[in-house]
Length: 250
Image 1 (cartoon, rainbow, N blue to C red):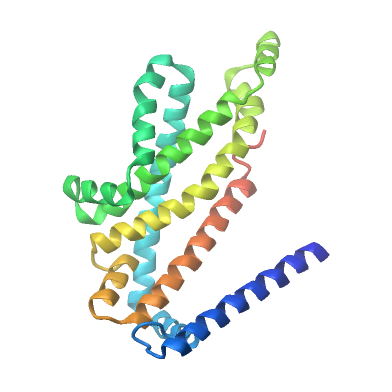
Image 2 (image 1 turned 180 degrees about the horizontal axis):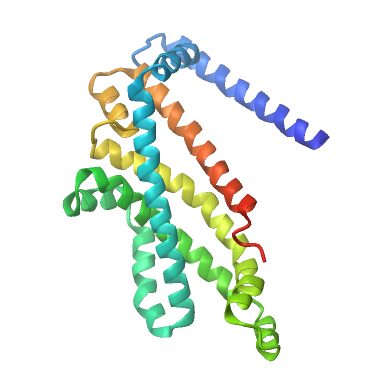
């Protein structure tokens, strides 16, 4: 308990330090159009919260990023099992995964704009960004399975579902959680970036784009702060759900 409070205190002190740094920079520059103060940004965020557009934008962006994350995760797990189990699949799919991992986010977004409807660009972008990370970690988890356990399970004639539940999933779980810890943030940032490059109706990306166009720096800071906070909250919420629901428990 004491360690927990110490961590909270340390976090609060670090947060206060950087807020003071932000305040100092804003006071030195003394031009709100370049760097608004933290208080001004928080006040503007409070105003935005009272507007219907704010909640509609959050809902739209969260939905599209979540869909992309789910699609990328499912496809990544499937490809990991294929590349682990079949040599042909490994030879064919691994180069594609490595290529996808090395491709810049902007390239994915531009290709998505060409291929599909603008409204679905954040979904596809988030999915493509997440997919290689999920694949790499799940495959690594599969290779980490102790073969002696599998041989013992076969000797005792355990069913495949039971082997999956008792041996495979517990072995892969740490790798999957590590992947999700990274993938959620990646999906969120990629999805918002896609909305900025391909702004579509009510969304956080469209709000950021409009802030840039009309030089509303305070709005830009407020929406950016919101993106960071939502990214942290969504990541913690998803990891909490995975652990709480026990999807990977025996």
